[in-house]
Image (cartoon, rainbow, N blue to C red; front, side, top):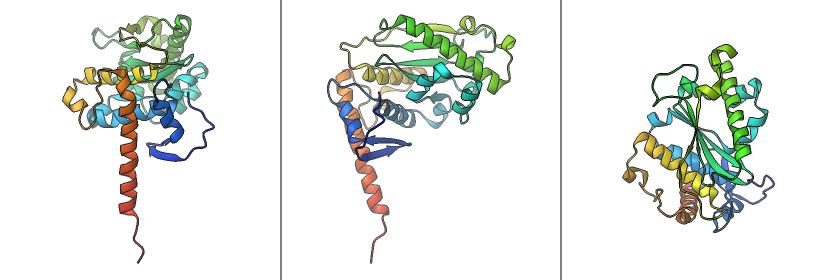
Length: 253
């Protein structure tokens, strides 16, 4: 997870995420990804991989959302959802860290949670894409229960539904452990989270591989190549920002 006491110089600010030299060290071989690398790449992927229309159907929570689930109530739900109506989205992506292990969860079709929808395809469900699926079964059950509680609170504050109308979410929402490639070591979970999130979006919206790979090789067959790919991406963004700042800086006569 992120070291909140970092003092190194900020190299890049991307959508309010400040990347420092300490954060780049997480991209070295055998290092764990921290919150800022995870949040940065998810935001970058969202902005560059999806069209504006596709973006309107997706919301990606930052990594601190999962940490807040165990204290979620209606007032906290209001604060988390003050800028987004989750019932207008098809997919809610939640990066999760449990016992220093990263994985991604996806809430599909939350808008249908209040209805006995006849379409199996659009039935509300919680997908878990975990490259180490047996690492903590008991905590996973707790996490699913916390997600149900969040959805229940969101139904109250955003849809004005009563408890009777919401019903039993464990029945209404199917829980699915998606079969994904397992990691071959104990430190690449962050890479697998990003690759699984990327593949989910590409498959869900039918994005062609050529479009997904435009400019940078994001769809990499080897997980180990993702580290230098993200590091080079950040370096390019830093250089582009420096050039932009130099051009916009007024000249002194």
